[in-house]
Amino acid sequence: MNTAIRNITLALASAAVLSACATTGGSYTYSDASGNQTQQQNKTGRNAAIGAGLGVLAGLLSGDSATERRQHAMVGAGIGALGGAAIGQYQDRQERALRERTANTGIEVDRQGDNITLSLPDGITFDFNKTTLKPQFYGALNGVASTLSEYNQTMIEVVGHTDSIGTDAVNDRISKERADAVANYLRGQGVQSARIETLGAGKRYPIADNNTDAGRAANRRVEIRVVPFTGT
Image 1 (tube, rainbow, N blue to C red):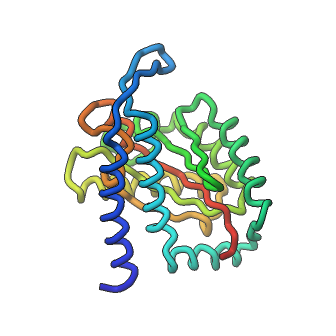
Image 2: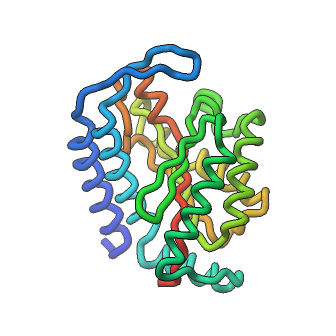
């Protein structure tokens, strides 16, 4: 088994353990925009699960060959690297812009260190079991694309996720095709292709309980991870 395949295998195995450990918390109730109460997983556990999943996915998308490929492509495209205190300040501005331009769209913005993650819920992004973007979601993605184009000193990782229903093969295909659909839309709006990498994670990284309708809906998502380009 070559090094790349071995690293991916180890990352997937680690993710399974981390996700299992992180999702054993209780639940809490909140009201959605319509005032309906919904049971959700304990926030601490949910955040831990997100962190675990993103950490492993970062490894899958940022291995030696993937990182080097994107870095060379970005340098070739004339994109400069960030460094030092400028990284945090740059991401502060980009986070504010993303929050403003995605307000009331259903897109969730999460900041962890210098990395920003956008979560695009399945219900407003794709029809059930489909991989074509809903036209009514174009406006929300336009706001994302314009921000990513403006703040172009970042690498973009687009990852599709599914719930636990169905076979691994089907879920892997759907999640990858959905990630590709989002990535292609961003490219079509002017985001440089050299910055973008996609992955279909299938059902491997749940952020909620797959035993409930609400949990499965939360797990069906596409995440856009925005990582500063440091040139190293």
